[in-house]
Length: 98
Image 1 (tube, rainbow, N blue to C red):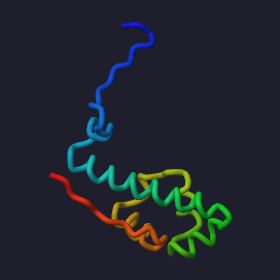
Image 2: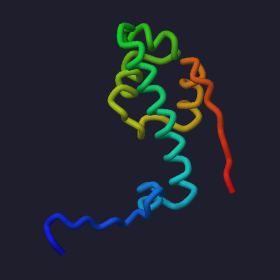
Image 3: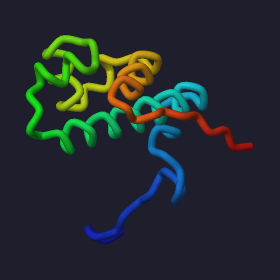
């Protein structure tokens, strides 16, 4: 194998989370990651808003907003991320595929 060869474990189109977690845990992590990305984008789009102001809108502390901005996914449950996304006006929805 040359130094520029790439070995892929995760099939194209699949998530690396599928390699790291059981199917049910991977599904939850995917949802949490999507919600966190949405909240990070909301914070970026409202960059003129202070973390304190964002915290007031989201109903959390400024420290929790800081955790969101730093992508600390392990600090947030799926249900809390859904609530925060709704409070941010992101209209979270779930879609199932067979």
